[in-house]
Image 1 (cartoon, rainbow, N blue to C red):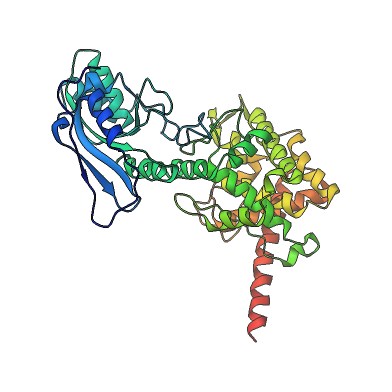
Image 2 (cartoon, rainbow, N blue to C red; image 1 turned 60 degrees about the vertical axis):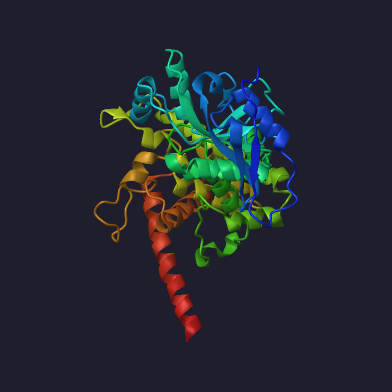
Length: 423
């Protein structure tokens, strides 16, 4: 591309910052290819929290669009098939307004990019934040609208810096906690995703969802919650079940999860644990059987998505995994637990019976088991699944009612034991 005028780079580095690799040639190359308004004096600043370097400038849409891409992996070296960006929401009213503005010659700003020619060299500018604005500009350009657009360009990011830029650049569009979790897990490595693909909770080459929704891919939080509760269950003596607190937990989302990191640190071989893999496969089959049993049926005149997706309610998912862990060394009862998927006469989880179940202490607006995700709901579901494995005859109204009563009786007994310890 011909140089229209000389590109001059002025480094703006706060005092005391040393040891950063030279990027002047890369910045000049960027300036020559994109010809920003600021070419005559292109400032490079340093984010001293992460030592990431960037410049802010304005380029024509006709230069921005052909040489940029929104198809950007978070880890291009090790996990190039998996993306950090959210799914595009082109039908959303906010995007339609954005598109109308672009066609009305609006100049956008704060499109966050990385200049990187190490992969997809034909598109050296990788758009990290502002993908919807980029798409609006692209469509407007097709109609001859060629305005200057404001961009923030980073140079020579490492993996940690790239993750940080992904997070801060998505703040304006309220990055979901599930997307945050997915980005964090991508940086940590492919192990969790590969495990989910191997057991069938994700399809081959499928990534985790960037937000939790019914009948969609599972989220990082789903997967972490399943694994954490399986191992929590292994610490429970099934012979002392009735006198032990059996409360599944939920993985933390949208920030560091210390319990998850601690589990990985203590059990680096968990990804090869055959019993955990079997539990993962069996849960996938249960969820599949539940969907198939409900598919085509109607509840109150409309398809019951709630019933079809019951296995992925956090209380159900965490409790099922917890009980699988408890019974890992009890092949007879574990087999009954796994065979729940094969129950006939109604859907495996008997969602209708769960919906009608309640205790005298429940509030008026309680909708039955498998709708809420609080501790009481999770504890009740553990009792349901564990009790079912005594005979393996499936979830009946009588069994569910008994399990709820046993849960509250256990709570009362544990309260007494704790009080005795204080005497």
